[in-house]
Length: 83
Image (tube, rainbow, N blue to C red; front, top):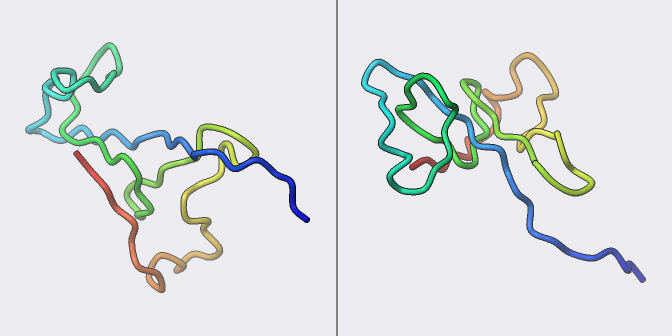
């Protein structure tokens, strides 16, 4: 019998700094880097332009979707949640 404790996975978001970015995400509680602009926060993303990593537990530092080859993203559906 498996006795491992289940726990929620926490992810490091991917912050995107586009031309139209700003600091508005701070108004909804997002902690942003001290400098620069942030247009989007990809909360959980498995995309070639940004992949989230797990922040806690035994999977810490692992990407959401492991990359197995140069063209692995072309064969998978993307996982993408942004605010």
